[in-house]
Length: 129
Image (cartoon, rainbow, N blue to C red; front, side, top):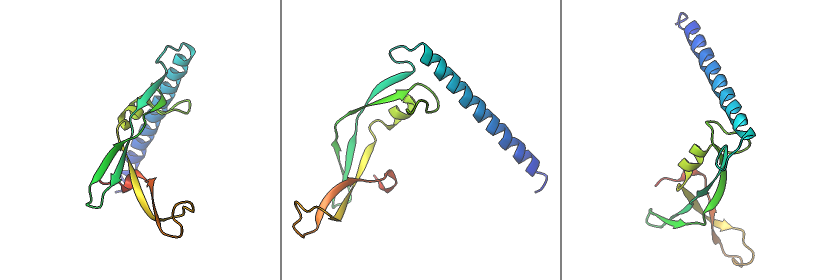
């Protein structure tokens, strides 16, 4: 077992160096394109379609279309300038936003002492289509 430790350390060091070189090259290419921008390079505004996944009593989900939003992204491998890469934003396009119904929400205007049901966006980990 001890004879594999130097090989594992060397492989991790090579992987770390490759990651650092890739990130530095991507950042340098981003900064170069930032000096000479075009309409869609390095930034682009993408229209993102959103859907709400509303759970039904029978265990199924009802999908309701939400208003589309415009999201700025950057053409690169990694996030730069405070924006996500366009490949990531386009991959997230059309994914449903799961909703959870909270049985005891505090709503003084409509509940009048009774439990109110209010829909809230939930984490994607709780969504099982």
